[in-house]
Image (cartoon, rainbow, N blue to C red; front, side, top):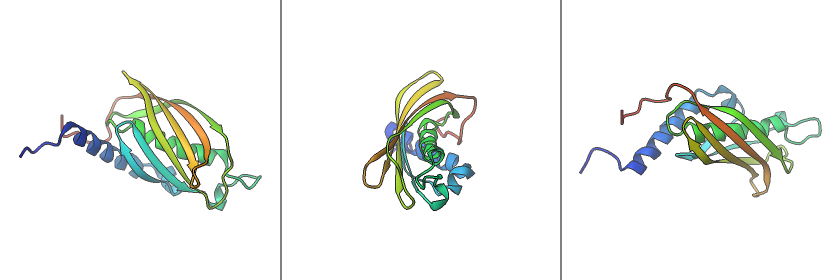
Length: 152
């Protein structure tokens, strides 16, 4: 028996540790009640329940709140390799309304990653499965790591 994990298990464990580190330090996401559902290298899913304080003047979910959820899933996914990564830019399309009480899930998936740049797609769905927003995020690695890497 060895004392090291197989490569896939080690990468998954590192992604988990990075997720915990980034969300533990993210006061904004915590204040909105966001919670991580799962992470693997380059992918993550984050959930949030829409509260009355998240509604706009039309009594539907404020776009900024939906964007915040998508952005958090994007952050967890692109930081899952333990390389400090920030958003270089994002575009979002809102395609269906959300209301107070709706449970939202944002699924971020890596589409491209090379050098210091990455491209991620994020789909936000209501609990009934209806897509409410699509976001594309562009990431850029900056110096630093989130957690000590035992492989180094």
